Image 1 (cartoon, chains in turn yellow, brown):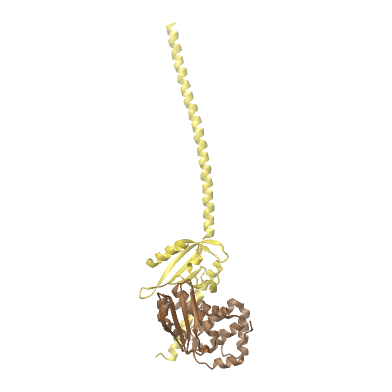
Image 2: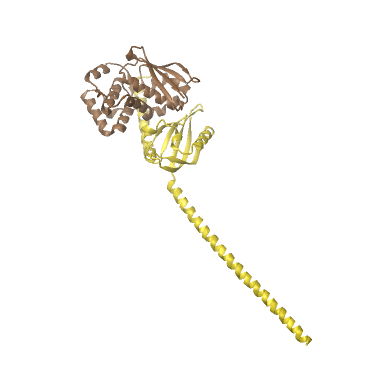
Length: 191
Length: 202
């Protein structure tokens, strides 16, 4: 049986640990959440609440599937996490509380107990919608430039075709003149 | 709905009942109040605690330290009073105690499956309370039902609704079930020897 002073000491240490975890989670600028082994959300940090618009009270206890639009991809991630301890850079569409959809890069980690059993999962994500927008704009610019370039090449080919055609015609005419000259020379000789 | 009001008589009666609970329950109920009613509601609660001379300083409550359950119960009743909650609201406050407590997150070893939480429910209760007992006399994973009994706990009838919300939320996390029903079939306030909750899930 533990002495009362020992119990008090452990309680104080646990209180400090809880305060530390809470402070650290709330400091993190990246949205993170803690998932149960059944993929239910059991904890979110302030950055999560800020980005998604969901309050901890309304989203805790919901299935992680609720957050994303690609339900099949989530099922696949869940399957992969049974084998792999972590998964990185899984691009998904997050549905915010107001219905707005944003693209996020997700990172998944498995919590393993000493006995080797999975006790839960961690999920973190970064909003990459602005980056995606820039990427799309760049891709559009490249597409337009490529189109322009193709048209220029076409014009050049046409010009080349005309120029070469003209050149060939001139060679042909020169040969015709040469042939006619020879014929004329032959006729003169016969006379 | 008639306005619920905690009286000095309620306080005197409840404070007589022994037993302690971890402060995390008080703190999460306080967080629920803050989220639902803002800082104004928290101030109102503090005023009522002072008026009723309830022996607690909310500023110094810590998650893992022990406090009288009677005080924790009175805080639940006062939150109902301040927010003018109906029974649904009290049930939700019970759910919130699971959702918002950092200790619940540390205790994920209990939430691995329905089978584990049901087998280890008595241990789970002891993580929070130094009195009373939580028992699971009967359950069937195949038929998807469980009977949970709470013995040695008699503070106020509203706490039965609060506990139903609390157990519902634990069941939801542990089972991953889409639908859970909970019904209080026996109650110490109706003359039964214990509270008994009947769970089903799909």
